[in-house]
Length: 332
Image (cartoon, rainbow, N blue to C red):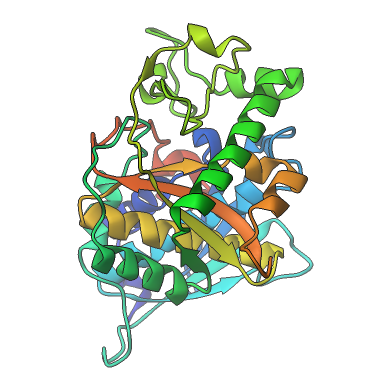
């Protein structure tokens, strides 16, 4: 396929899909550049959008970028390209987290991504609202686990007793976050002001959601208040469905694979009408994250807890325009 086939409209649509990915605190820590000679998109970290206290080693940043890379793959396939992704392609350039070369479509005899993932890109939103008592069907859970496996990760659905234990770990992490002055200040910095002054990053207050009145599901309080009784509360589902996403290793490439697996799961859930929110708090404390490693063997590395169910879609969070996150020569 000739380079000219990648027109500006298609490229902008691909980048719009990329920035629709979830990111920690909606920080959108990514930048893109097109190499026109090889029709390759470079995906770089935007370290100025990292969270120094909640994510000191950049694990969540890499997961966010990995989710963005997955959306790029989905969009490329939608527009008839065959994407070839390389993670961390240049050891001497650590800020270059991934490249995606657009190649001519190949004969589709190999496993590819579902076509309905592309429209799901635009409908996927985190829902921090209560879910109904309706259970996610086992065949859907199996599909979600298979999606993560395709990306080199593992998704399991712990039994109720193990789910309860994991939620207690989340609760401990949430309490620590609220008590930590630096983390609280950092969290509030990513909240958008009401009315005038809203930006294209961070979290509008309309997206924060209530707390669980029964205190069973520790939803994140982005305002980091030390008096949870002052927060709005509602009754949440009594039998939550929690998915644990793990990887065999815990290197930078594994974090990027986690992001791709996470977004594959989230888009597939969206295609099935299943809502999701993330319980990331214990991943920010090394000792608590270790407690979430799969039992009884404790092999693998916990990367994310995903809450799944049926309920409100959840409001959209703002996104930066493709031109704001790409080099000037990429979109001309």
